[in-house]
Amino acid sequence: MPSPAPPVNFPTINAAASAALPGLLRTWFPAGRIRGHEYVIGNLAGDPGDSLSINTVTGRWSDFASDQRGGDPISLLAAIRGLSQVDAARELAAMLGHDLPAAAPPK
Image (cartoon, rainbow, N blue to C red; front, side):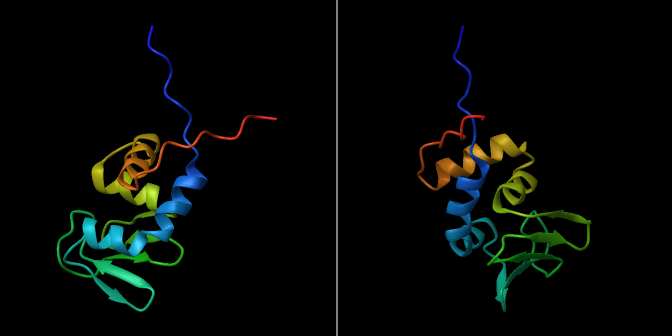
């Protein structure tokens, strides 16, 4: 029987991704541009435009054309790739070159 997948520490992965967010956004959305503290692009598919806005400080994002939104880099990657939050967190950790951190044990 295969061993269960390790737990995902969302706060740790989001913190690492937030520190690298400007570079990640340029990779995910090459047609985007910086406007103040916002990275703007047309949509989650990366089309040119300005309907999708991602705050480069907080990681909060919203696609005003589709009403999709989220509060962190994991939710953004999940929306871009059509992944679950867990799968997006694992993919993001791999992109950042991090071993998947273990979640704190329950008290």
